[in-house]
Image 1 (tube, rainbow, N blue to C red):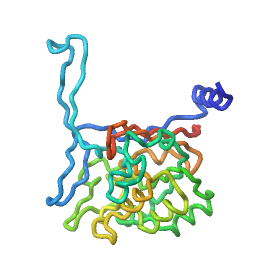
Image 2 (cartoon, helix red, strand yellow):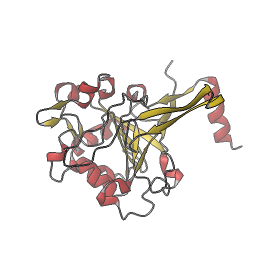
Image 3 (cartoon, rainbow, N blue to C red):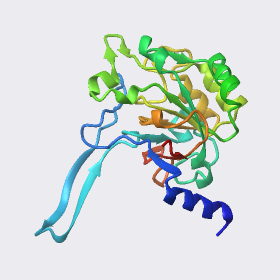
Image 4 (tube, rainbow, N blue to C red):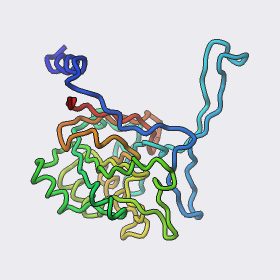
Length: 261
């Protein structure tokens, strides 16, 4: 075993490094994104017991589940969006596993979002962050910390008004900057999707999906515990299920970071 891996294991065992779970619990109550009635909607999770130590299976317990690929904490593959449909290796089963692991850059906009739920991250804000914490490296996961995941009630989490949902996200220019100028793996958010709540009214509509997936990048949605990560220095592992021709998948997102004692 290499010295690097030996040191990693030793520091995990010793507690100098910790594993932070960035994943929301997934169950029938997990909220899903809503779309206008003219579009097909994604179902939430439903579960049915196959057997539970009973006559259907005396020694084992298991369930049948049904859900949309993009339910709960989930991964968006490039093929999820029309702009990414012709990108090579664009599906959950064809993306190289190496691309699921990368350094985390956590951009904290909690103060801005507290006063403006429609806040959009801009390139200028990113560059100000870089002036303090360093340039975003190639192959990074850029995680937008908003503390939106602390909205435990589904109604306030989705935050839908008469004119649609209101939640923070990325300005199209920020998505383009991250995808093309910084060559990130992808972006992660605490909201139900990687675009802002009002993104359907933007030009182009849903600009983060349009830009990121068109560039072969990924999305992570419905993250939590970003307040437990430093601005830089953590490593994120975000591996979707290897669904054949899958456009996305629920997943368990883990971060390895120094333990703050």
